[in-house]
Image (tube, rainbow, N blue to C red; front, side, top):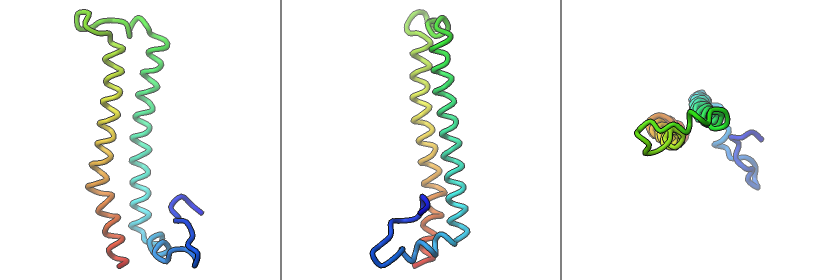
Length: 112
């Protein structure tokens, strides 16, 4: 059972699954969605890693106060990481609504 295969029904696998899994548009959809999700995950992982390494190994830099002592650079960068995470999530949702959902609906529509 692969990650896209639904649970088996008592009378066997869903017949629509076989038709959908053979559709080249479905394979394209899965490949594009996976590549995009892994790219965004990689970006987020790199940002978290960079932030964590800065906190661990460059405390003087993170303790600097670039805006006249209001707050430290570490707080600003930490907030930026959170905002970027929300932004990347919004980017994924926007692309899913624009591209992935339309392609999935077209595939489902052709099977009906």
